[in-house]
Image (tube, rainbow, N blue to C red; front, side, top):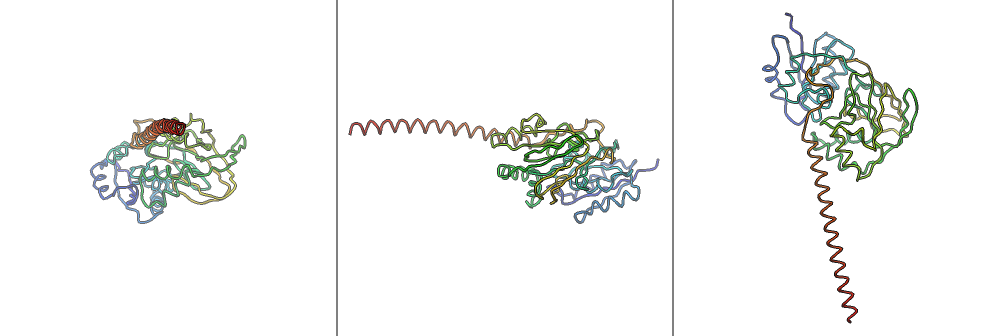
Length: 348
């Protein structure tokens, strides 16, 4: 039997851990009776896209992105509308697309999925000519993507720190959104167009999104107060965000968005500045991807972030209750002191 040709493109800088062990793990875990493989490491931003394009032009069967969502985007955008399939070994900070597709974060287990070689033709999106495979958007999530890129360190804790620090200071904008049926103005904290269900780290911005329905899920988060923030965060990790009163959602094949001033957008978490008019559309079944045949699309995988958020807001509530009790004690003490002072003054 003729072996299939598979190329691994490894981003040594993605995520929070080194990639020195990757070649050894691939050599031990890959089905060498089925695949003939090569491993290449990237040297600079955009290198993965260049290599993937060359491999697609050479009719390589599978190109595997070993890295985070940025690496996956680079590889995937270079092989759309070709017969070359995308494989994913998730080694990033968020791993949104891998989580949506049920691909294990354990390297050996993700290679076991590649060995099964279950290939599906799935949708991808385009925002102002830039391909995205998970989510794109504007407003606060694009702003946070900028902050995350500037932070100099990766990982979910950096992401959460930025959200908690910047969230309540961010000013919502007014957007006009036009689809095939109507044009509507919204004052929004953020607008996300989702091909897949989550940002990464199991933060589900569009819990019902599918990569095989030919539609994007548009999520509009309306302005909210500090009292709303804990529930919004918990809903996002519980896959119930679409039921929150501050969230508006609809599905569309394409939309046009107009805003009053230029600003940031993001595509799969990578930020860039753009103008006042933004076009977003879905390309149906435009990319072939190795998926997990044993899990339904969008199932996701447990992680520590939900627990951290729950603990964080539970602690906030506990602190708030303690403060309320202390306030009541202080008020009682003040009342008693005032009563004594009044009696003392009366006697004098």
